Image 1 (spheres, rainbow, N blue to C red):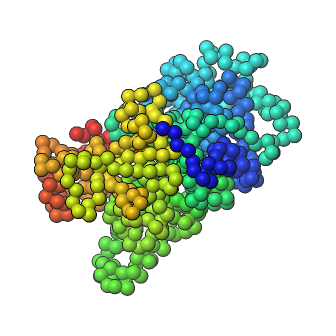
Image 2: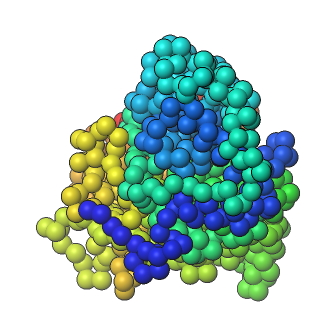
Image 3: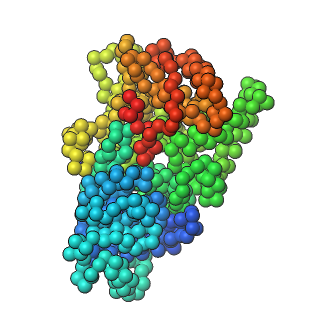
Length: 578
């Protein structure tokens, strides 16, 4: 089922994604567009658009046609961003690959996507072999901006007079001057009119089920996210963004790159591992206007910065005294705001569930944060509410005029008076993907003929208009107790992960009994004997069970000697621990 924008969303300037970017690049020609945090080098919007124009000439000279697939593998850097935008504005299809994928997974994705070119960072390309990619014509380094490997069998795709792909690169300056004899200016920025239903991105998931699927997102899917970001003023001309999430992930791609570039934001690319200490330093230098992050960032700062403070005996009594507790909370809020650069409107948390204890504390101190909900299959946004109207424990409200949600529940089960119906969350709207690339069975399993998408998340949809989403856990991880109660292990894990000596954990079902697998915090347990560790974990188990319903209680805790295996997006591969 095809969806259309309504009202102003169907009119210019919001009815053509590529026209939005052409206008933005021209209007903000002299403003800074992208800065590499590591080198400090900056591209203005004019220079950025010029790099795109050069890449279009390269595609044309090497026989790339609209609809061809271009794979992109590397950490965030300016060339990564240029390659992404040049590909979709040419009419080709970009295949962004998370740099954390294994070489075997990356090889599979490049081949499965039918990519004809690969743009990659040197370190990641060095782990691959050209012989494993029979359809690749050449490999371009996003570090050196030159061809580093080429397939002689594919030279027939080259334009007239070109012998190799490297020779095309060497001749780009001459080609560029011929096309733009008076120099490149704002008036030269034009992109083709492309049907919004055309696929623009194939984004491969890295789910916990052990295999990846290529999510096909159209220009209109991207437009739904971008136009919402523009209309909500998440970013605006002259605002500042610090991009530290992987841009190959739909969340970072949409709101640290696509929306900012559409309005004239200055993006600083933080291409390092985002440890809290390094991020705090970068935020105080960049002073971002909006912060896009995953729960892990806030949770680590909460554990490392806040918990030690409020646990001091000298401060515990303060929290028990009215007015004094508010003064302490105000002080903590001020320190947190300062740590995040002090110039932001709000922090948007997404990508996973925020720990309830952390969420409750942040709400209590009036920290400006909100929690959104999305998935790669929606490119990614489904719901969001500005922090001043955010309802704690919710995942925001479905995007007005763009997305809608409903609950798929077992109608045979009784519903108590006043109880919100619970079941699988279904969503429909402009952001919903076209399907999984070359995988009709997987597409049919999640996408109904009338456009409703099975999210796989369990929860409820509330408020008078049925738009506020509450998430309980994943459908595939829900455990049915012997007495028929639904148990969501994520809720138990959230409580256990906040207890002493716990780094990460999983709750599993074994013959009708629940057990917790725990990887201890290496810093706090370094000098602890195995017996002491076992005793402390048993104390945790008893404290945990006192907070749970009888059918949710944990029979025992098993210590894991190493970290749980993760997906490239840092989710635990649950299927390995059933």
